[in-house]
Image: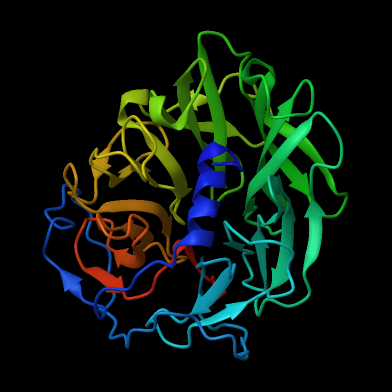
Length: 374
């Protein structure tokens, strides 16, 4: 979510608890298997990983054309990089203010857009180079009515970002009835933005519009709509929908809803060929507390062909925060373990879109994205 109640709680948890590591990387035939989808893209061999609990802070040269996974780690350490086989884990961007979250690679793999919390409750959008150097502030909430900006995603041509913004009539996160959410396109050259989707006025239902991602042809943006009754709390979430809107702003008040709210869709990402959208679904409540099944799904951009990728049940581990690998052959995601001794036990994994070839990386982390290597 844009820096909302859920994100603030997640950041607090990351600052307090370091995620635990479990076992070496492996393929699994457990609850993540039993695919529903019929597609069979090329498989990537499972990685062999030597467990490392804490990313190293030693700088490593990041060469052009090298694949790297950027992800959020913790506690309070911001961003880390590792190779797809789990090696060379190290922290980056130590000079950024606050704690960096929600990284996204530029199409040429040279920059990372991030959403740091620069101080309590204050979120901005920055970029850093691939090795974490040269931090640049792009956008923040410098005046009312803006309350938060976040969740940056690069356009296919690398010239724009799509972002989420939260505004309040009074410029404070107080009366929820005064909150509005917009999805905006931010031009990197002019440092200006334009609204392409806007949440309706608050009535009996309250909605948060967030997690925007570009289509590969640059003409559309997919995002998530979280729905709550009034007054909203994380515990009374009604569900979530995946929606698509044109990037030119012509559907600003009329996004196309792809999924029913009861599915609880969130965190969508568009496949590189434009044929599928991946997301995770978890039903009512906040996914880090809910006992509901939490799984990955894909769907076509026209709302047909809903396909379940993982097969996790109630009170089982959770598959969350999926994104496609740049070649579209795999999905990288975070998995949260149901660990009574550590409710924030989490890691990273790959899986094929048909639900096969699950590969765990024994690395604690969230929000993973694999670097494009054009």
